[in-house]
Length: 231
Image (tube, rainbow, N blue to C red; front, side):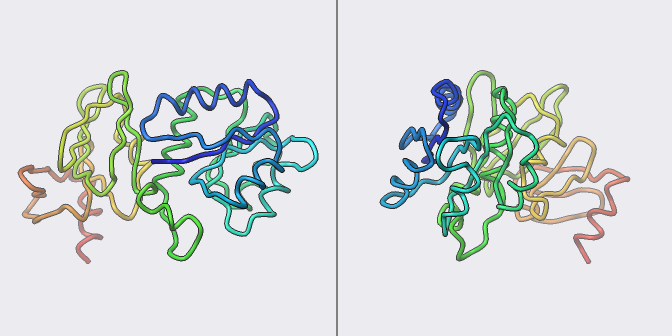
């Protein structure tokens, strides 16, 4: 379960973010905060995995609030002001959404936030189990998948198959787009139509990779990727 706060002085912003979150599984709103002071009061006694943070709020601005936190949760900024993006990334925010933003951009921010690696001992390390998951859109539903279960990503026309240890999920995405959400050190494109999870490789023989019951070809232009892996 991903717990979250919405911190924004505009009621419509709360409605939009909550409606987007309601489309995803396992996301739980803990509190609607209309000032940063409300959020501080909540965080003094409770924890959340994620905050959606507006910047231009009364009394205490968004980044001023963020600087008051010793161990801030993962943070997605939602604002109409693009000029503060650099300052946000200096504060280690997960993503910067410019209002108005659509659901696809929102989903990309969630995937980016919860598939990024965490450092043991930091505040975000407590959410390791969540940080190792990704949301995949299949038909009209969103499936939460543990990244460690993904074995193979295979291009299939205008779609891609994400093959996990438990199931195969068909999504309308390019391989390159999916790889953007996944840890680069853990996944490798080995063919124009295939990417694989390194940890699931059983054997490599000639121009073939064996993963569980699957045989994945190695494309000529991707052979160097395999050579680097075997060094």
